[in-house]
Image (cartoon, rainbow, N blue to C red; front, side, top):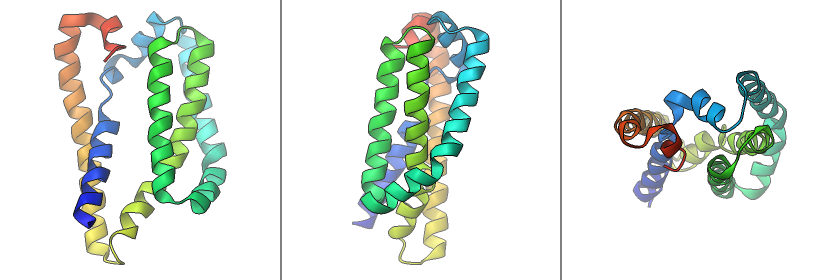
Length: 163
């Protein structure tokens, strides 16, 4: 059972690392009606909201459990991608930023606790599984960066929004 749980955790880490437009995030948002200054305002708002919501989301996670919290995180991240896909202008991207901040707070610390819950106080196993999760996330990001360069040649920036 543990191996299956770790596989799902690692798969989520890989998928979360897959951000095809990361190398040109500013350019994508500029093409979707967000000014350069607003891009940086949105990043500041994201950081502030994550700071502000960290403790309340932790309290909620303690009540609903790690698994439900992580599922909520993934649902909110999918909603962010949908808003990113259809959105245009600052209003949509402000909404995306707020939802992304909420999503981030539901995974921050929770993934560590969730992995630890399957390790039965075996710190070596926890360290190994946490490192594997991070490696899967990094691998997803590297794969998405390589795919980005291949896809960009074919579909340009606007096409990356749909990927």
